[in-house]
Image (cartoon, rainbow, N blue to C red):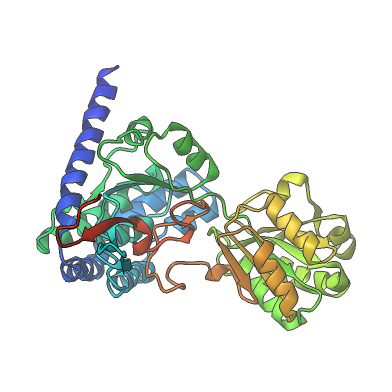
Length: 423
């Protein structure tokens, strides 16, 4: 082991130990104390927005100098409006019911044993994410709300923004009488730290990677700590044969164009063959006029001359840009088959007035969020009433879909009796 590796190992071990110690004190605090700390965080973010903005400007300047894609620059940006939005998300988390100590179920056995199943924090969460500085605040707030400490390892592209947000959060915790080690921002961008971090089984309870598929697969391959995965957002909108045109146009355009760089933006539009001749040229033209490139199946290309032929890979891709794949399908079963074959189990929508078709789609599509007559962009913790989210899990175990504070808890059984013994 080199000296650098030894230094990284010692640093990571100290992060874990400090977080574990902080988590144990945090878990015993009242919900009111944790909420007060969150409100202090939101207040300080607004008060120190200039400081945060100046740090963010350094990240944006470096991103432009390195010619990073527009989608990355959009995700990096923390202007005044977004800082206020981030602060509001923290306040929304504070307003949520306290999950810690919540009784999930309780009952008495015939023998006289009182059994209660109660929510408790996971302990220490490690977040590994890319160029999304608001994740720093979202993850911190959701973890504090749920009584967990968190170690935040953001990407090098957002290091200045993450440090600035981390300092504000640390100061807010300290001012609220909470151990600042409850939220620690990793100070180095050295990639060699990540394989060490995800093996800290003695101190870290769960690792949540959030970013591109390459990052998530690398973390899952290296980790010995349990991993909650947030895989790609290859989201679909299926326009059923019984969908009014105005509904189709409104939802398709919003799903794709409202913010193309995020994981719940639509990446594939499926048009039912029964309405394709009418809908594909009209909606396709609207997408093209908005600057969107269309990659289509043979039928799409025949109906829309400006569409480029799609490859098989296009059905799998998460573009995060003004590119969309379009395919004409023969009915709801073909749409379901396409989504379950090529989708990422994130968010998929059906647009229809046919209740039976909607119910079939909802039952058969294997995704964490299934939308009926609404935009994929609504797949979001804030929209679902969870406040900020720590990620959108495409796993099936422990948590699935947008993850709020309750999703960062586990449970314990509390059993009470009056001298009861087993015979």
